[in-house]
Image (cartoon, rainbow, N blue to C red; front, side, top):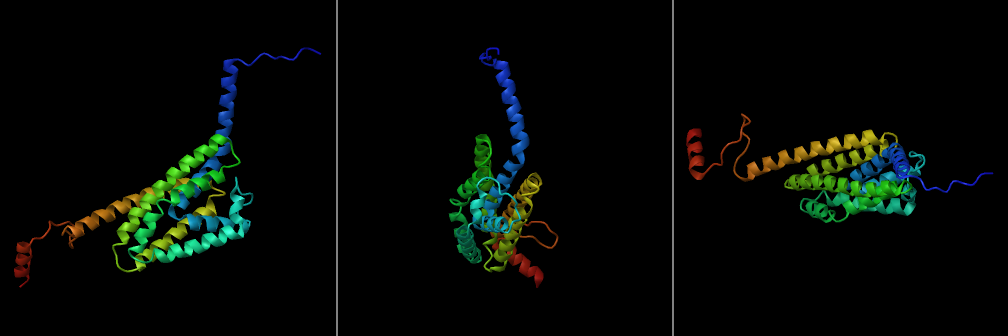
Length: 243
């Protein structure tokens, strides 16, 4: 038998091997990374609802083999605590004023929880993927929560709970749709979620522009154009015209 070749690989060989490994990681872990980021997106809306619905889906066998450490979400205690906290959240966000305070407080809770959930989703993957999932998931949750915060501040100017209730149901529907589709179609789910986030951000901007117009004394007349703020003299002239 010949002597084993103990010659260290050349630099070119090491670079080639590293490139092949990176390409393999991209092919194998892209869907997993998309799952992690999409779940973090949902957590930016409501961490409690995301954990509860994901836990129920895993427990019901809808997920198959849960990725990473997500099997922990199927614990009865985890599901129960998440459901109770979401029930409190649902009721609290129905009350004007309290809703804004609740959302502001959760600026400190949702992004870290989302980053932790993203890391747990990718836990069994390459460490590079785990780090990417944590960073990108946390960033996605910040974007989602900030957009939601602006939306909640806008609709919280209304004194009735109906608007907030509709928003709560809509958010729960979005999270439920994500939990239903992300396991089989992670990349498509992430793309649709990002598109929805952009649409919501544009909607929030329009709402705030309308509110500023109202509070500054301008409003939308029948012709659909903004008017200049009316002074006391202008109001007097308008009343004279009506007479």
